[in-house]
Length: 486
Image (cartoon, rainbow, N blue to C red; front, side, top):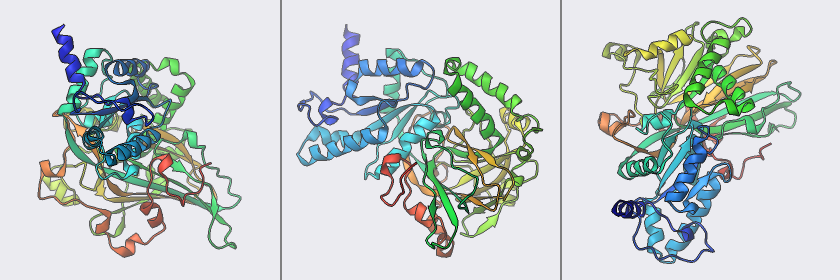
C-alpha cells in the first residue's frame, strides 16, 4: 500500500491536467506543480504489438489527455493547439500553465523516422524555449535513442518499465543536436517522362511540391522541389535500396514484422537478395556512387570543392550522429596522422555544424564495423554537401533519411537533379549518462561551432537560398509562399 502511494506521488511530477490541452475543460487546481511535465507521442504501428501495449500503460499511469497516438493525431496539430492554449493561460496569470511551459519535456516512441517527424515539428514551431525530446526505441535501427543513451532494444511495456523510463526522463540532461536541411530540385522539359513520387511514399520530414514553370513564360523548363530535414543521416545507394525493399515488404505483410530480432534477420536476407554483398547484375548502376552523381562539399573556407569518391563506393552516408544501422559507428576514430592529412575534426560531434561523410563498398565492407576499430571509408567532413546527378545515369536512385527510404525517380533525358544539404540550426534532445553522443563543450571547449553564416555571401547567393531561408520540416508549418502539396 505504501509503495502505491509513493508511485502515485512520483507520477504527479509528470502529470498535466486536462484543461492545459482542452480550453473548454474546467480549470483544475493541482495539489502540486509537476516538476517534469511530459507530453507523450506513440506510434502504435511501431514495434509490432509493443506500440499499442505501451500507449495503454502510459494512459493508465498519466492523464489520458497528455498521451497521443500518432495514427490518430499528428504532432504538429497537438503542439500548435497546446502552445496556443498555454500562451492564453499564461497571459491570464495561470501559474501552473507557466510552469508547464517552462519545464515541458516530450517523449516520442517509435522508429527513427517517427522521432525525426517530431523533431521537425518542434523546429518549425520556433519557440523561445523549445521542449527537449526523449526517444523510446520502437524501431529496427533505433539510432537516435541509442546515441542519447535510451538503448536500442525495444522496451518493456509494463507499469514498472514505464515508470523507470519516466524517472530517467526526469534525471536526463539536455543536449543540442544539429538540424540539417535538405533540398532536392529536379529540372527538365515540360514533357519530361519523370513523374514525382506520391507524398505518402515520402519520409515524414520531406515534402514534395508541384512542378511549376520558371519565371520566364518562354522557358519550357519546369522544376519540382522536395524539401525537408534530418537529424541522424542521409544516405544514398545500396544501403537505401535494401532498406526500401525491407519497408516495401513490411507494408505488404505487416503481420510478419512483429519481432525486432526477426525483423533484423529479414533485413540481412534482403541484403543478400538485393546484391549488397556483391554487385547486382540486374542493377549495374548500383555498382558505385561515382556513376550516379558528382559530389561537392563546402568546408570552413566557404568554397565549393569536388569530393573524390573511389570507384568501388556503392553507398554514401552523410552522418550527424555516431550511430548507423542499429548502433554501428561508420566514422570510427581516425588517428592524429590521418586527421592532419585529411583535414578532419576529431571527434565527430553532434552540435559542431559538420557532417561526417562515409562510403561503403558493399556489405562485407560494412561488416568491418563489428570489429573494435572498424570503420567505413572516411571521405570528408563538411557543413554543406551537394549531389549533382549525372544525366542519363539511371532512371531512379534509392535514398534514405533517418531510417525512412524512398525510390527517387530521375529524368533520363536532359533534366537536371541536384540535392543539397546544409546546416539549419539545432534542436534539444534529452540524454542519459549512457549516451554515446558528444557535444562541443564536453569534448573540447576550444572547438568553435561551424554555421552556414561562415560561408562567403557569394557562395550563399544560389538557387537554394530561398529554400534555406524558409526551411520547414513539418507539413502544417510550411511558409505561406509554398505551392500546394499534391
